[in-house]
Length: 153
Image (tube, rainbow, N blue to C red):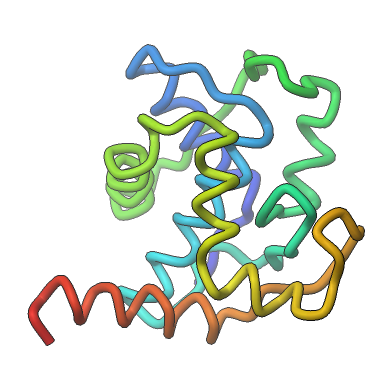
């Protein structure tokens, strides 16, 4: 059963802080996207129930974005309650291992070069607002192919 995206966000924030890494709302949005995408690639199931939308600055989970909106470009220092589920913590840690070293702008550029975000925004100007949903199937297929390539398949 999928989790609430805010619970996944809390877990990512808590693990980032434990590692001494700062996290902004923009960076959090990209890390949430990667957590969802890789979970879909590995398990075929969504990690959280909310949709990911293809906004101008990359993938965004609107409910989580609104929750941390007031931080703007500053570090999130809100009290959080991370998920107790071990598989969620492991996935969040793996996402941070892979993507945590990048800042928000680098993650934005990375997502802009990947097909799930690009295809969801097909036909839109670069600075055009959008609520287009990035389909689970697009994430699963794109990242699933990356797993197959890494495995030599």
